[in-house]
Picture 1 (tube, helix red, strand yellow):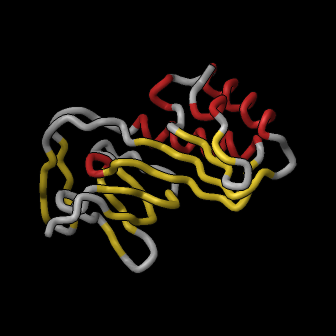
Picture 2 (cartoon, helix red, strand yellow):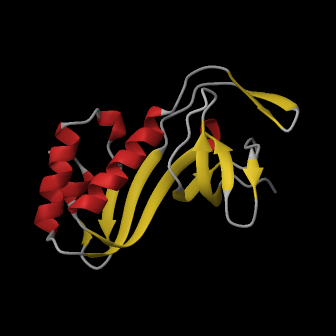
Length: 154
């Protein structure tokens, strides 16, 4: 049976040579995802095969939210349309078709030195100063849950 999704940790790259920051969890389409590099801990995957990325931390504050917001925005800006070509270890291959922008999620276990209201206010400020495609799709703090103000920009 063919798997429709797989999980990795590592980096995402596009045909223009742009690299993501290190991604904690990459959810990707394994059937059409040539691994540009893989070892036990890190994989490098083409953006065209990535469904989404989750940034995971034990705790979050406003600075960590800003860092992860920027990382996910950069990843989302790497998407290119149409035909893309890669070359790896002497093998040339192409990936065709339109790609959606991958989802981005920030997942933390607890708050650190801030309140949920502080986080929601910072999230709204970041969204005001960013393009809508760059917004994280969701921010979840497990010990307090999902706050609608952080999930959807005001």
